[in-house]
Image 1 (spheres, helix red, strand yellow):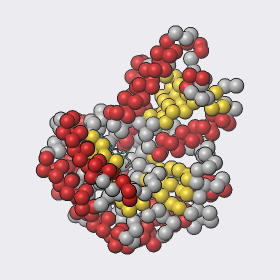
Image 2: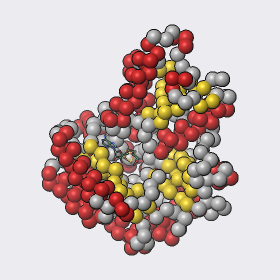
Image 3: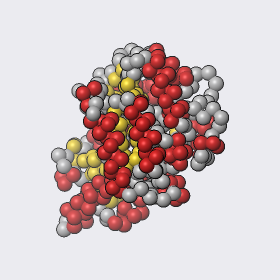
Image 4: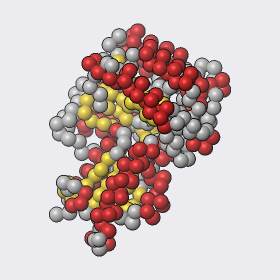
Length: 380
Ligand code: SAH
Ligand code: F3S
């Protein structure tokens, strides 16, 4: 019987897409192979957010190319590449003849429902794809294209189906999950790279492009009203789109997990400006203070990039001081790597030496992730 193999790198959105791909393979009667060597169809879902992610994919493709070197082409498997490395389609096909096909960012296979492990209480539901935020370091807006929200009824239908299948914890996914339903009004603003916080709209912490309740809060409420939904998580929020109505909803709606992931990236305003993040350390702090004031049991985890272009010792010291003040429960600390095609790769220099990046990484990782290990929550 024909067999398939799926290898997934990167974020939860990729994991969700791979679960749908599994349904596609199974619906065609294929069975899961124990390893890629035994598969006739291989799906590799790639990540390109950092150079290290690219390298892991290249290592796998090198292995595959070596393995099939001495095997006649007619017996090669059908190898499909998906995910953020789709930007390198031509190069990948040329360098690795074993690659049969590279999917574009429009090939999101939503027509197939996800195959989820029966014993996993959690279901990942993608509510949007792409991103309009254009953080200067980030490849996602280029690799995944503009933000596109899936429609309300489709999302609710998928949640109901997941609950019927026994998954009572729902994790809503989007690259910028809390701007769901707002891309039409936000695109123009987001596409602009501000470059400096002084160019931001005056109310930089609340650039509100809607009146009343935001679409995302409406969606959260609808999901929490579905019978059988016990817990709701959402990944990943951009602090700038975390408006007061969402703060109030998180505080009052106890089905929403008390752990929130809120990437800050830096505690230095000048670095945040170069990153085009759209908020200051003070506005981020205000957001977290409001959340904790409403419910002291709320825990915050974050992402931080060290060694971003031009990051001085003084700027790093600001991040360090900020981190100490914020009591993050966990942080995914990354050393900056320039990604081809992004604004930072074009207009700034990657001028922080690797040894300095590594030292800054270790300092933050130790303070946040190792000194407080005992109190860490279970994180998806
Ligand atoms: N919207 C997604 C972003 C995906 S990138 C999310 O917020 O999860 C995930 C994390 O990778 C980012 O938060 C950032 O901390 C890190 N990252 C992105 N681009 C990077 C780069 N060029 N170098 C180092 N880290 C990066
Ligand atoms: Fe990337 Fe910023 Fe969007 S980190 S995914 S451009 S919110």
